[in-house]
Image 1 (cartoon, rainbow, N blue to C red):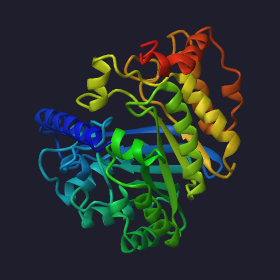
Image 2 (cartoon, rainbow, N blue to C red):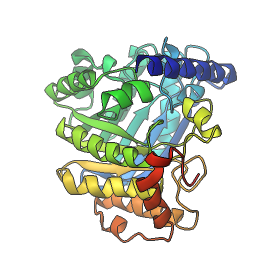
Image 3 (cartoon, one colour):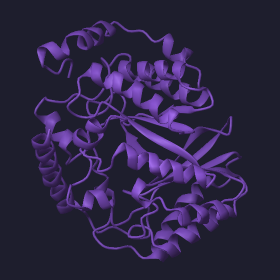
Length: 357
Protein backbone atom coordinates (compact mmCIF):
# COMPACT_ATOMS: atom_id res chain seq x y z
CA UNK A 1 0.00 0.00 0.00
CA UNK A 2 2.94 2.33 0.67
CA UNK A 3 4.10 1.91 -2.93
CA UNK A 4 0.60 2.68 -4.23
CA UNK A 5 0.54 5.77 -2.02
CA UNK A 6 3.86 6.92 -3.47
CA UNK A 7 2.64 6.46 -7.04
CA UNK A 8 -0.61 8.32 -6.41
CA UNK A 9 1.24 11.19 -4.73
CA UNK A 10 3.72 11.41 -7.60
CA UNK A 11 0.89 11.52 -10.14
CA UNK A 12 -0.89 14.21 -8.10
CA UNK A 13 2.28 16.31 -8.00
CA UNK A 14 2.71 16.01 -11.77
CA UNK A 15 -0.87 17.12 -12.40
CA UNK A 16 -0.46 19.95 -9.87
CA UNK A 17 2.49 21.31 -11.82
CA UNK A 18 0.43 21.15 -14.99
CA UNK A 19 -2.35 23.12 -13.28
CA UNK A 20 0.03 25.76 -11.95
CA UNK A 21 1.47 26.31 -15.42
CA UNK A 22 -2.02 27.16 -16.70
CA UNK A 23 -2.94 29.66 -14.00
CA UNK A 24 -3.90 33.00 -15.44
CA UNK A 25 -3.52 36.49 -14.05
CA UNK A 26 -7.14 37.48 -13.50
CA UNK A 27 -8.90 40.44 -11.92
CA UNK A 28 -8.25 40.06 -8.16
CA UNK A 29 -11.54 41.78 -7.35
CA UNK A 30 -13.64 39.16 -9.18
CA UNK A 31 -14.71 35.92 -7.47
CA UNK A 32 -13.81 32.71 -9.24
CA UNK A 33 -17.52 31.88 -9.43
CA UNK A 34 -20.87 32.81 -7.88
CA UNK A 35 -24.36 31.46 -8.46
CA UNK A 36 -27.78 31.22 -6.82
CA UNK A 37 -29.91 28.07 -6.61
CA UNK A 38 -33.06 26.92 -4.87
CA UNK A 39 -32.24 25.19 -1.60
CA UNK A 40 -33.79 23.69 1.51
CA UNK A 41 -33.08 26.09 4.39
CA UNK A 42 -34.33 25.51 7.92
CA UNK A 43 -37.14 23.29 6.65
CA UNK A 44 -38.25 25.80 3.99
CA UNK A 45 -37.41 26.32 0.33
CA UNK A 46 -35.32 29.42 -0.24
CA UNK A 47 -32.30 30.62 -2.19
CA UNK A 48 -28.65 29.77 -1.64
CA UNK A 49 -25.74 31.87 -2.86
CA UNK A 50 -22.58 29.89 -3.53
CA UNK A 51 -19.47 32.01 -3.89
CA UNK A 52 -16.01 30.73 -4.75
CA UNK A 53 -13.45 33.32 -3.72
CA UNK A 54 -10.29 33.46 -5.81
CA UNK A 55 -7.31 32.93 -3.50
CA UNK A 56 -3.76 31.65 -3.65
CA UNK A 57 -5.23 28.15 -3.43
CA UNK A 58 -5.55 25.09 -1.24
CA UNK A 59 -2.63 24.50 1.12
CA UNK A 60 -2.81 20.75 0.48
CA UNK A 61 -2.69 21.23 -3.28
CA UNK A 62 0.24 23.64 -2.92
CA UNK A 63 2.03 21.35 -0.47
CA UNK A 64 4.38 18.37 -0.88
CA UNK A 65 1.60 15.86 -1.64
CA UNK A 66 0.02 17.60 -4.62
CA UNK A 67 -3.60 17.72 -3.50
CA UNK A 68 -6.60 15.45 -4.07
CA UNK A 69 -6.74 13.13 -7.06
CA UNK A 70 -10.07 14.44 -8.40
CA UNK A 71 -9.61 18.16 -7.75
CA UNK A 72 -8.43 20.90 -10.12
CA UNK A 73 -9.76 23.85 -8.12
CA UNK A 74 -6.22 25.19 -7.87
CA UNK A 75 -6.91 26.49 -11.39
CA UNK A 76 -9.58 28.76 -9.89
CA UNK A 77 -6.99 30.45 -7.73
CA UNK A 78 -4.46 33.19 -8.24
CA UNK A 79 -0.76 32.92 -8.94
CA UNK A 80 -0.27 35.78 -6.49
CA UNK A 81 -1.45 36.54 -2.97
CA UNK A 82 -4.71 38.51 -3.02
CA UNK A 83 -5.05 41.39 -0.57
CA UNK A 84 -7.73 41.56 2.12
CA UNK A 85 -9.44 44.47 0.41
CA UNK A 86 -9.67 42.61 -2.90
CA UNK A 87 -11.03 39.46 -1.25
CA UNK A 88 -13.75 41.58 0.35
CA UNK A 89 -14.49 43.20 -3.02
CA UNK A 90 -14.96 39.73 -4.49
CA UNK A 91 -17.50 38.86 -1.81
CA UNK A 92 -19.37 42.14 -2.16
CA UNK A 93 -19.77 41.56 -5.89
CA UNK A 94 -21.00 38.02 -5.32
CA UNK A 95 -23.57 38.90 -2.68
CA UNK A 96 -25.23 41.37 -5.07
CA UNK A 97 -26.82 38.27 -6.61
CA UNK A 98 -29.08 38.07 -3.57
CA UNK A 99 -30.63 41.48 -4.19
CA UNK A 100 -34.44 41.34 -4.15
CA UNK A 101 -34.45 37.67 -3.11
CA UNK A 102 -37.03 36.70 -0.52
CA UNK A 103 -35.92 34.87 2.63
CA UNK A 104 -34.87 32.38 3.76
CA UNK A 105 -31.40 32.78 2.27
CA UNK A 106 -28.24 30.75 2.63
CA UNK A 107 -24.68 31.89 1.92
CA UNK A 108 -22.09 29.24 1.12
CA UNK A 109 -18.49 30.46 1.15
CA UNK A 110 -15.90 28.45 -0.73
CA UNK A 111 -12.36 29.07 -1.88
CA UNK A 112 -10.16 26.75 -3.87
CA UNK A 113 -9.17 25.46 -0.43
CA UNK A 114 -10.13 26.63 3.06
CA UNK A 115 -11.91 29.81 4.14
CA UNK A 116 -10.31 29.46 7.58
CA UNK A 117 -6.75 29.33 6.19
CA UNK A 118 -5.30 32.80 6.78
CA UNK A 119 -2.90 32.32 3.85
CA UNK A 120 -5.97 32.21 1.61
CA UNK A 121 -8.31 34.53 3.49
CA UNK A 122 -6.49 37.08 5.69
CA UNK A 123 -7.99 37.70 9.14
CA UNK A 124 -9.13 41.19 8.19
CA UNK A 125 -10.99 39.90 5.13
CA UNK A 126 -12.59 37.06 7.06
CA UNK A 127 -13.87 39.41 9.73
CA UNK A 128 -15.28 41.86 7.20
CA UNK A 129 -17.05 39.13 5.21
CA UNK A 130 -18.67 37.78 8.37
CA UNK A 131 -19.81 41.31 9.26
CA UNK A 132 -21.38 41.81 5.82
CA UNK A 133 -23.36 38.60 6.23
CA UNK A 134 -24.44 39.53 9.76
CA UNK A 135 -26.00 42.76 8.48
CA UNK A 136 -28.48 40.89 6.25
CA UNK A 137 -31.40 39.58 8.31
CA UNK A 138 -32.62 37.48 5.39
CA UNK A 139 -29.64 35.15 5.73
CA UNK A 140 -30.60 32.29 8.02
CA UNK A 141 -27.87 29.81 7.13
CA UNK A 142 -24.15 30.16 6.46
CA UNK A 143 -21.86 27.39 5.20
CA UNK A 144 -18.10 27.83 5.55
CA UNK A 145 -15.76 25.34 3.90
CA UNK A 146 -12.40 24.36 5.38
CA UNK A 147 -9.94 21.54 5.90
CA UNK A 148 -9.87 20.14 9.46
CA UNK A 149 -6.39 21.42 10.31
CA UNK A 150 -7.67 25.01 10.23
CA UNK A 151 -10.48 24.38 12.72
CA UNK A 152 -9.49 26.25 15.89
CA UNK A 153 -11.68 27.10 18.87
CA UNK A 154 -10.79 30.80 18.76
CA UNK A 155 -11.81 31.00 15.09
CA UNK A 156 -15.06 29.15 15.74
CA UNK A 157 -15.92 31.50 18.59
CA UNK A 158 -15.37 34.49 16.28
CA UNK A 159 -17.72 32.97 13.71
CA UNK A 160 -20.35 32.12 16.30
CA UNK A 161 -20.27 35.63 17.76
CA UNK A 162 -20.44 37.48 14.45
CA UNK A 163 -23.13 35.23 12.98
CA UNK A 164 -25.23 34.93 16.13
CA UNK A 165 -28.81 33.84 15.54
CA UNK A 166 -28.00 31.97 12.34
CA UNK A 167 -27.38 28.34 11.58
CA UNK A 168 -23.69 27.98 10.77
CA UNK A 169 -22.29 24.82 9.24
CA UNK A 170 -18.55 24.24 8.98
CA UNK A 171 -18.14 22.12 5.86
CA UNK A 172 -15.35 19.55 5.63
CA UNK A 173 -14.65 17.10 2.82
CA UNK A 174 -14.61 13.77 4.59
CA UNK A 175 -15.13 12.18 1.13
CA UNK A 176 -14.98 8.63 2.52
CA UNK A 177 -15.03 7.21 6.03
CA UNK A 178 -12.56 4.56 4.84
CA UNK A 179 -9.00 5.68 5.63
CA UNK A 180 -7.42 3.79 2.71
CA UNK A 181 -9.85 5.26 0.18
CA UNK A 182 -9.49 8.77 1.60
CA UNK A 183 -5.76 8.84 2.29
CA UNK A 184 -4.45 6.74 -0.61
CA UNK A 185 -6.99 6.77 -3.46
CA UNK A 186 -8.14 10.37 -2.92
CA UNK A 187 -4.83 11.59 -1.44
CA UNK A 188 -6.85 13.75 0.95
CA UNK A 189 -4.10 14.35 3.45
CA UNK A 190 -5.93 13.75 6.72
CA UNK A 191 -7.18 10.83 8.81
CA UNK A 192 -10.60 9.93 10.12
CA UNK A 193 -9.37 10.95 13.57
CA UNK A 194 -8.44 14.39 12.24
CA UNK A 195 -12.02 14.74 11.02
CA UNK A 196 -13.46 13.57 14.33
CA UNK A 197 -11.30 16.02 16.28
CA UNK A 198 -12.54 18.89 14.09
CA UNK A 199 -16.15 17.77 14.57
CA UNK A 200 -15.67 17.75 18.35
CA UNK A 201 -14.33 21.31 18.28
CA UNK A 202 -17.15 22.50 16.02
CA UNK A 203 -19.84 20.98 18.22
CA UNK A 204 -18.24 22.28 21.42
CA UNK A 205 -18.49 25.77 19.91
CA UNK A 206 -22.20 25.36 19.25
CA UNK A 207 -21.84 25.20 15.47
CA UNK A 208 -22.95 22.49 13.04
CA UNK A 209 -20.97 20.30 10.68
CA UNK A 210 -21.57 19.67 6.99
CA UNK A 211 -19.73 16.69 5.56
CA UNK A 212 -18.95 16.11 1.89
CA UNK A 213 -19.04 12.52 0.66
CA UNK A 214 -17.51 11.61 -2.69
CA UNK A 215 -19.20 9.12 -4.97
CA UNK A 216 -16.77 6.93 -6.89
CA UNK A 217 -13.23 7.98 -5.99
CA UNK A 218 -10.62 6.58 -8.39
CA UNK A 219 -9.54 2.93 -8.19
CA UNK A 220 -12.98 1.73 -7.04
CA UNK A 221 -15.40 -0.39 -9.03
CA UNK A 222 -18.99 0.78 -9.39
CA UNK A 223 -20.16 -1.61 -6.70
CA UNK A 224 -17.40 -0.58 -4.31
CA UNK A 225 -18.28 3.06 -4.93
CA UNK A 226 -21.95 2.36 -4.22
CA UNK A 227 -21.23 0.61 -0.93
CA UNK A 228 -18.60 3.13 0.18
CA UNK A 229 -20.93 6.04 -0.56
CA UNK A 230 -23.76 4.58 1.52
CA UNK A 231 -21.46 3.67 4.41
CA UNK A 232 -19.69 7.04 4.38
CA UNK A 233 -22.98 8.96 4.54
CA UNK A 234 -24.13 6.82 7.47
CA UNK A 235 -20.79 7.27 9.23
CA UNK A 236 -20.76 11.03 8.65
CA UNK A 237 -24.25 11.29 10.15
CA UNK A 238 -23.27 9.11 13.10
CA UNK A 239 -20.24 11.33 13.72
CA UNK A 240 -22.53 14.33 14.04
CA UNK A 241 -23.02 15.87 10.60
CA UNK A 242 -26.22 17.90 10.36
CA UNK A 243 -25.96 17.88 6.55
CA UNK A 244 -24.26 15.42 4.23
CA UNK A 245 -23.53 16.81 0.78
CA UNK A 246 -23.06 13.99 -1.72
CA UNK A 247 -20.67 14.79 -4.57
CA UNK A 248 -20.44 12.42 -7.53
CA UNK A 249 -17.03 12.70 -9.18
CA UNK A 250 -16.80 14.75 -12.37
CA UNK A 251 -13.60 14.50 -14.39
CA UNK A 252 -11.73 17.78 -13.95
CA UNK A 253 -8.79 18.90 -16.03
CA UNK A 254 -5.22 18.19 -14.94
CA UNK A 255 -6.09 15.65 -12.27
CA UNK A 256 -5.14 12.05 -11.57
CA UNK A 257 -8.76 11.13 -12.30
CA UNK A 258 -8.50 12.72 -15.75
CA UNK A 259 -5.30 10.80 -16.43
CA UNK A 260 -7.09 7.54 -15.58
CA UNK A 261 -10.13 8.59 -17.61
CA UNK A 262 -8.06 9.22 -20.73
CA UNK A 263 -6.56 5.74 -20.31
CA UNK A 264 -10.07 4.27 -20.02
CA UNK A 265 -9.27 3.20 -16.45
CA UNK A 266 -11.98 5.37 -14.94
CA UNK A 267 -15.64 6.07 -15.63
CA UNK A 268 -17.62 8.69 -13.66
CA UNK A 269 -20.38 7.14 -11.55
CA UNK A 270 -23.62 6.04 -13.07
CA UNK A 271 -26.57 8.22 -12.10
CA UNK A 272 -28.15 4.92 -11.12
CA UNK A 273 -25.41 4.60 -8.50
CA UNK A 274 -25.91 8.15 -7.26
CA UNK A 275 -29.67 7.74 -6.92
CA UNK A 276 -29.28 4.38 -5.18
CA UNK A 277 -26.77 5.81 -2.71
CA UNK A 278 -29.17 8.64 -1.88
CA UNK A 279 -32.19 6.36 -1.60
CA UNK A 280 -30.57 3.76 0.65
CA UNK A 281 -28.80 6.33 2.81
CA UNK A 282 -32.05 8.24 3.30
CA UNK A 283 -33.68 5.05 4.58
CA UNK A 284 -30.94 4.42 7.14
CA UNK A 285 -29.99 7.91 8.33
CA UNK A 286 -31.79 9.97 10.97
CA UNK A 287 -34.38 12.13 9.15
CA UNK A 288 -33.07 15.21 10.99
CA UNK A 289 -29.87 14.91 8.94
CA UNK A 290 -30.17 16.52 5.50
CA UNK A 291 -28.78 14.55 2.58
CA UNK A 292 -28.29 16.72 -0.48
CA UNK A 293 -26.76 16.29 -3.92
CA UNK A 294 -26.15 18.67 -6.81
CA UNK A 295 -24.19 16.74 -9.45
CA UNK A 296 -21.68 18.59 -11.63
CA UNK A 297 -22.07 17.97 -15.37
CA UNK A 298 -24.80 15.32 -15.09
CA UNK A 299 -25.36 13.51 -18.36
CA UNK A 300 -21.98 14.60 -19.77
CA UNK A 301 -19.12 12.21 -20.51
CA UNK A 302 -17.01 13.83 -17.81
CA UNK A 303 -19.83 13.86 -15.27
CA UNK A 304 -22.08 11.25 -13.68
CA UNK A 305 -24.21 9.77 -16.43
CA UNK A 306 -26.33 6.87 -17.60
CA UNK A 307 -27.21 6.07 -21.21
CA UNK A 308 -27.99 9.59 -22.40
CA UNK A 309 -31.73 9.02 -22.71
CA UNK A 310 -32.63 9.16 -19.02
CA UNK A 311 -29.93 11.49 -17.63
CA UNK A 312 -32.14 14.56 -17.47
CA UNK A 313 -34.88 12.70 -15.59
CA UNK A 314 -32.34 11.41 -13.08
CA UNK A 315 -30.80 14.85 -12.59
CA UNK A 316 -34.21 16.41 -11.94
CA UNK A 317 -35.18 13.63 -9.54
CA UNK A 318 -31.95 14.10 -7.57
CA UNK A 319 -32.59 17.83 -7.34
CA UNK A 320 -36.16 17.21 -6.14
CA UNK A 321 -34.89 14.81 -3.52
CA UNK A 322 -32.41 17.40 -2.25
CA UNK A 323 -35.20 19.96 -1.84
CA UNK A 324 -37.84 17.67 -0.35
CA UNK A 325 -35.83 14.86 1.28
CA UNK A 326 -38.47 12.54 -0.16
CA UNK A 327 -36.83 9.54 -1.81
CA UNK A 328 -39.98 8.64 -3.72
CA UNK A 329 -38.76 10.66 -6.70
CA UNK A 330 -35.78 8.30 -6.87
CA UNK A 331 -37.76 5.08 -6.44
CA UNK A 332 -39.85 5.66 -9.57
CA UNK A 333 -36.88 6.17 -11.92
CA UNK A 334 -36.60 3.62 -14.70
CA UNK A 335 -34.76 3.04 -17.97
CA UNK A 336 -33.59 0.10 -20.05
CA UNK A 337 -29.98 1.00 -19.20
CA UNK A 338 -30.55 -0.36 -15.71
CA UNK A 339 -29.69 -3.78 -17.12
CA UNK A 340 -26.22 -2.55 -18.10
CA UNK A 341 -25.75 -0.93 -14.68
CA UNK A 342 -26.83 -4.15 -12.94
CA UNK A 343 -24.39 -6.11 -15.08
CA UNK A 344 -21.61 -3.69 -14.17
CA UNK A 345 -22.27 -4.10 -10.45
CA UNK A 346 -22.20 -7.88 -10.74
CA UNK A 347 -19.29 -8.44 -13.12
CA UNK A 348 -16.92 -5.46 -13.15
CA UNK A 349 -14.72 -6.83 -10.37
CA UNK A 350 -14.38 -10.16 -12.18
CA UNK A 351 -13.57 -8.70 -15.57
CA UNK A 352 -11.31 -5.88 -14.31
CA UNK A 353 -12.81 -3.73 -17.06
CA UNK A 354 -14.53 -0.38 -16.81
CA UNK A 355 -17.98 -1.05 -18.25
CA UNK A 356 -20.18 1.34 -20.16
CA UNK A 357 -17.79 4.28 -20.61
